[in-house]
Every structure is written in structure tokens, then in C-alpha cells.
Length: 187
Image (cartoon, rainbow, N blue to C red; front, top):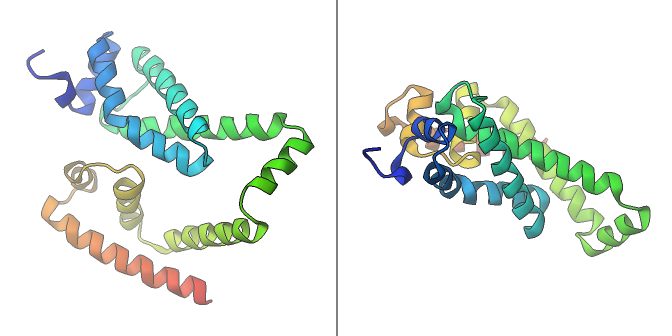
């Protein structure tokens, strides 16, 4: 390999992992580890569970890449996030499906009040409604920029625009999002 493994593009990482390159596996982990941890932490609100999700996700991603299950190597980040979301769902099902009622009651007492849970649900619902009203390109931009935290050149390439226009799109999208969100909350 001519270049350092840590500087490989996603497509080259996928190819190297499929060929059994342990350095590429480490580089893949380094590149996506923090993102996965924070995604899991934001969904599960537990450091231990977030660590478990990150580990399980990377095991599944490596297995899938070794078996050639990723059709488009350039969509590696979306592939990883999709697997992570599946692991998070499984974790929730497992946790809530196997706890006794007494354990659940103790957790609710330790966690946020019912009012806070309702407000969080209300905010999430408002955000989802707001996102539905955005243009598909605006939703796609927000997903890639904030959720997947993709680099600007990758977002520009995916949207088929020049990097210079991305700042304008970000500004307009956020302005439009705020306006729609405030209208949703007012109505």
C-alpha cells in the first residue's frame, strides 16, 4: 500500500478490510468510533450501553465487510450507522423485554421525571414534524452534517454541489428549520 492506512478513503478501507488487513480494521475503528459512541450515548443515555453498542456494531461491520455485504463502499458511514441503529434497537428490546416490573419501576424513579420525559417526547415530535416539512435535499443535508457528521467535501459530493455552496445551504436550511419549528411549537 502506497499511503498510510489512516488516510484511506472509505472505499479503500472497505477493500482493505475485506482482504483481511488488520491495520485497515484499526483505521476504520479510529475513524468511526467516536461517532458511534455518541450516537449510542444519545439514544441510550448510558456510557456502558454505548460502549457495548459500539463494540457490537464494529464486530458486525467487520463481519459484513469481510463477507462483501456492502454493495457501495462510498456509503460506508451510512452502512455503519444503520447497523448501529439496529444494535441500539436490539439493546432496548433486550433491556425492556427481560426486566422485571420492579426493576423498571426503580429505573423510572432514578431517571427524569414524567414531565421531563413528556417534554423530551414533545420536542422530538416537533423536530420530526419540522423535518417532514423540509425539502428532501435539506433533510439529507441535516442528516449528513449533524447526524452522520460527514466531512464537508463528502456532503458536497453526495448532494452534487460545490463545497463553497454548502455554507449557503447550511445557513438557509437552518433558518428554514427554525422558522418551521417555531411555527410547529406555536400551533
